[in-house]
Image 1 (cartoon, helix red, strand yellow):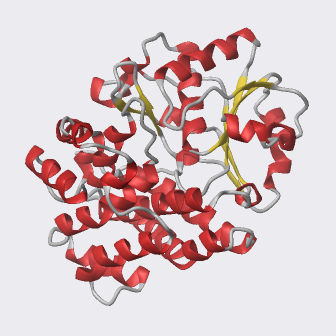
Image 2 (image 1 turned 180 degrees about the vertical axis):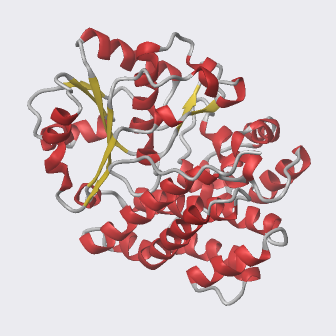
Length: 373
């Protein structure tokens, strides 16, 4: 039996003003013609000019939950402009899409062939153009993650997972999050919270990741309300970006049922539901389900967030979400009952169910969707 593999592979530059090192990173990775992958909102806000790398090729045709079609269009842009590297700027959507664009440069389509549930892990090689990631939100952790979540052409939101998907270098500049709207600060912040909670509860052995998860959770708990209410506070923004980064670093342990339930809803066509907001809704219900399976871990989570005892954690996170203005029910997101009906099967198949601390069944998924409705 092989021993557990504990590895952290990301090269991270973290501090206010770190964006200024981007030209040096381009030179270091011999990127002469970068494709900047971002979203339309950031383009309109002048993010490309803030990079100070001249006039690079730009691809920003990315939906709030990136799709296979987005990645194929990005691949065309990469080839049409003769690019030799990618700079991903934004939240999880541009970064995940950028990972898929880079994958398709030297891996034949369709993208769905590389999904984890389609045995895609073994098909992904290291033959990818260099990818630099610059997050502008504090939540997804995609900048240091080995996965990309993408809605395929058939409507399924699937994970593509490989160490070869981890960006070559990361710039975490908290100044880039100063203009983040309240609702996005709240949703992405709770995404970071869910990452830290779920990875800590994962049964995989990785004490290094456990320590990082608890530190990230404590930082998020201490600063998320202030970040939502006073988003110009750079100290608070820095703490939230570190919490998000730490949540991403702990992906090495795997996530859990919160994400299994959220992922398929993110693939709904014609509806935009924010992933972090979904996680905030599901987190209390999944904590109740997992509570008796890992009592010692629940006690440490309670200590990290200042809850008086583990059994109070579900209510604690429900109140926290309410305090920062997030909805508490799936029906508050514009979903209808018909949207939920096929979801238990998809949630059960999701890769995150494999590392939930308590075994997951279809009946469990059905009940938790109902509880969150």
